[in-house]
Image (cartoon, rainbow, N blue to C red; front, top):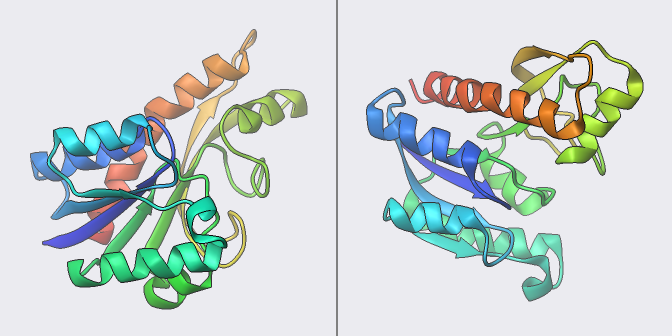
Amino acid sequence: MKNIAVFASGSGSDMQSVIDACESGQINGKVVAVIASRPGIFALERAAKHNIPSKVFSVKEYGSPEAKDSAIVEYLKPMGIDLIVLAGYLSIVSKPLLDVYEGRIINIHPSLIPRHCGKGMYGLHVHESVLASGDKVSGCTVHFVDSGTDTGKIIRQVTVPVEEGDTPETLQARVLVQEHKLLPQVVAELCK
């Protein structure tokens, strides 16, 4: 059984899909740690509900992304982490984490990379960009994390049609449904 750490910055709905898949046996793994980028997020409540240890690591507290990520590495070290899942994690992963977990960090992004990704492309900004571009199809992508922003090797994508009259919120809601299916499937494959 693989040990999984999930990193989150918001409600943690993608994280919940991974926890549920672990608990149902779909994933041969267990979420053993939740890392949050800020206090007070609902992802921390979800972790507590499932008795998963969680800790907040913010750049404000540590002074730099590298110092923060070094602290995360030290925190995770005794847990024997096999896979890190960025599930709505809005911080960019820096060298200390990449050095230790290269090839074992994945991210879910709410568009079809390489479109509508990179710096500043998160949350509703992604869906606003999709609608402004006139794209007829959007979707979500799970990819490996590297030193760039949304530039790592793509593992799998799922498409979602852009419908007439879509708002960023309606498109986001439909993409999120697919994220909750895709992310556990990829995690299950990586934990085989």
